[in-house]
Amino acid sequence: MDIDAQYDKIYRFCYYHMKNRTLAEDITQETFLRWFSSDTYRDRNQALHYLYTIARNLCINESKRKITEQFTEDIKASANDPLDAIALRLALEKLSDQDRELILLRYVNKEPVGFLCEQYGLSRFALYRRLKRILFSLKEELRE
Image (cartoon, rainbow, N blue to C red; front, side, top):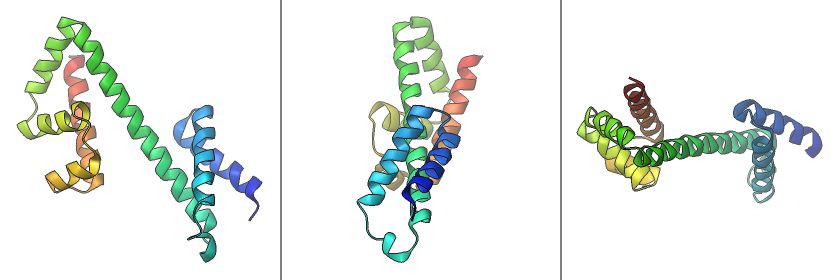
C-alpha cells in the first residue's frame, strides 16, 4: 500500500468533515499512528477500510468534543451574567426531569457516555441523538 497516496486521501476525508486544516492534519496523523499500532486489519488486506474507519471515528469524537466545549463555555458565560443565568434556568425548567438530569450528568458532572447508556438503557447513537435534541431545544429557548 502506498502510504503517501493513502495519507492524502485520509487528509482530504478529514478536512471534508472538520473544515479546519490544522485539525484535519492532526486527525490524519492520529489515524496513521493508530493504524501502525495495530496489525489486525493489515493482515486481512483491509487497510484502507480500517484507515477510513479510524478517521471517521476520530472526526466524530472531535465534533462531539467541540459541541461539549461550546455548551460548557455557554454555561460559564451565563454564570457571569445574572440575566443569562436566569434565562438558562428558565430554559432548563421547561425540559422534562429526565432531560434535565441527562444534561446535568453529561455536561456538569462529565459522566462518560458508556455510563449514561447503561443508566438510561440507550445505545450510544440514541443517547447522542437525544443530547443533540435537548441542546437544540435549549438554544432555541434561549434565543427567544
